Length: 440
Ligand SMILES: Cc1ncc(COP(=O)(O)O)c(C=O)c1O
Image (cartoon, rainbow, N blue to C red; front, side, top):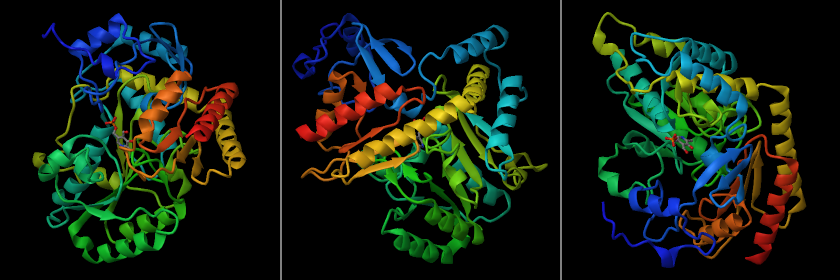
C-alpha cells in the first residue's frame, strides 16, 4: 500500500470536504465507472432510511435514482430487514446444486405467478449481467442440444446495455466503454431502435434478417426503455411486431427486464404491455427491493425440456457460488409482499401522475419523456447527445448541492425514484430541475 498517495484535492468538488472515510477510501478502493484522476472524493454514506441517504456529516440526500435503479421501497426497509434477519439465523447460504431451500422455491413459485404465463422455470444467478449471460447461453444451447448447429447468431437492439461481462458487452452497444475489448467480443447483428419515426426501419431490418433465420438463435432487447443508453423509449406495438416476426421464424426472444421489471414502467413488467410474450426473461435490480444481489432468468417449459437428456453434456453448465442465496431470496419474497400491496401500486400511479404533471407544465422543454415511474429529460447542448457530454458533471454537482442524487447519462437527466418517495420531495426535485434548466 502506498502511504504517500496524493489525494486529488485540486479536483475535489467544493461541496465535498474529504472526511476521514473518503480519504481512507481513496487509498484503498477502486470504484466502478469512475475516472479516479478527475473524480472528487466519494461521499461516505452512513445511513439510509426511506428515500433518503445520510452522509457522515449528517447531510441528507434524496435518492432520486434508487441507488442505480435497484431500490424499490426505500432504504433499510424494516420489513425486508426483519425477514432477512430471521432467515439469517435459520440458513444463510447453501450450495444450490443438489440442494434446495424454501426461500428459493417459494420465490420461484411467486415469480411464476406474476410473470407472463408462458414462463415455467426459474434459473437463479446473482446480478443483472449474469442473468443475461444465462439467457444467452440458454438460447444458444437450446438449439445446440437439438442439433441445430447453424443457429448461433444473436440480434440485439442498437444502443442497448445488458451488462459489463464479456458476453453482455458483446450484445450491448459498441462504445467507448467496451472499445478496449472489441476484438474479444463476438459478432452481434444490430437492429435500429424502433423509436418514433424509426419503426418501419426497424421492422424492415428485422424482416430482412429473418430470411436467414436458420442462422439466428435469439433476439435480445430492453423492452420499451433502453436505460443506460439514455432512457430511450419506444412503443409496445412495434415491440410486439418484432417479437412476432422472430417467433414466426423460430428465433428465441429474450426480454432484459433488469431495469424495467417490478413496476418501473407502470405495470409489473414492461412485457405486460404486449400480448406476444418473450421466451426468456431476465430480472435483477428491483428483484430484492434493492436489498441484496440476486439475478433470475426465467424461461418456457419448451426451453427447459431441450436440456433434459440422458446425455449429461446437454446440461446447462452455469453456476455461481451464491446462486439462489437464501438471504437474497428472502429479501425477494419480502419485496414482493410490499410491491404487490395496494399501497405500492397507488404510489406507482401517483409518481406517474406527478411526472406527467411536470411534463405538461413544462411544454417548452420538448424532450421530456415519461414512462411509469421514470421521467427523462434530454438537454439540448452543442455537444449533442453523448454519455461524455460535459453538462453531466455540471448537473450532477448542481443536484448534489441541493441534496438530490441523480446520475445523468451524459446530457440526459432522469428520475427513477424509490416508490416510497413523498409528493413533497418530488415537488422539490421538479423545482430544482426547473431551476437547473433555467440556469443553463
Ligand atoms: C437492462 C440492463 N441489463 C443488465 C444490466 C446489468 O446489471 P448488473 O449491473 O446487475 O450486472 C443493467 C444494469 O444497469 C441493465 O440496466
